[in-house]
Image (cartoon, rainbow, N blue to C red; front, top):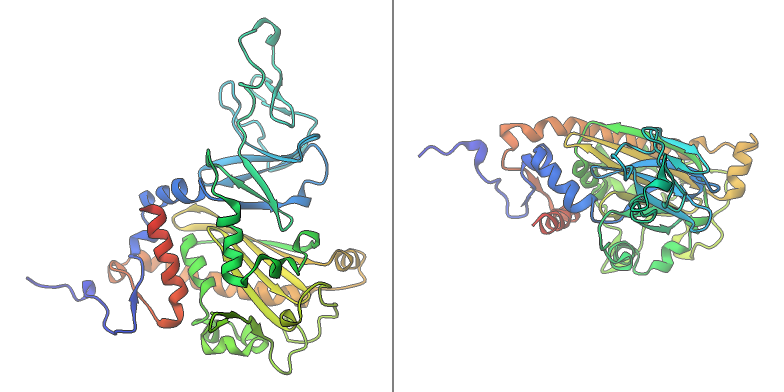
Length: 383
């Protein structure tokens, strides 16, 4: 029997195998992920203040479903499948809008912002049409950190265990992230990246810094320890974050002073430090003393992922930016460059996932143990 050298396990006792290449390319695997991960877990879909008053709505993609998120008059923010209960046409055909009611453009079935059927042609002659039974089908909604989170599961996962549990794993306690007052911050800049790579490659990239010295010169100037390839910001079980360089004045593209005050409630051990957390399955939260950066991912296909990134600052900072008194471009530019560098690396990796040379997968070095833990979670979730 001839053994193809490309199928042999990689040598080295310190190396651990990755997922196989087809995990990043197979449409059946992607469908299973959509059903078992994105359509069951909590997904962060938009900033709550993007819906400032009753009637404001926006459509978002969650798994294979399109969801309407709307601010109602009596029940706060609600979310529904974008499917008319009559014949299934999309109720909201745009990306966002403002409406007193939600009306299907096919047969004019009209729904309240609370999701009940309000009107339809000849409805009074159809006594068997119950207004609640034929309302929009709701999905579960939570607000946290100023963002709207939705779950399509009939019985959603416990938010405290699944979402806040990720925070406890990273920070040791939820109160540590509360110090940044993220729910009170405002978006000063938002960018959308259409990335030609599987969503898992993006998560894996975010979890490790073995690549930082290679592709992130600006970031490693600001946070020199990243040049050592270690992304774990824990030492002996204690959370410590990653410190700024000795001569670095701010988390900016050139390390200069940002001109911004620190967020008022951060703790002493959060000063001049960067923290990052992955909230599975699709959120990255990055905190620095004067602002917070939040990434939200939407997998579109096995080889395409849309990433939305918000830069959040104190409300008074955003007011000054909007009035032209203040410029936060240098703060935004640092992580924008990091994003572009990371996403290019992911896009250059994606084609190799279908190569014979990667059929059996690759290897993880010890500093990439976070990725190994992510792979184990992925296997368990997909069974």
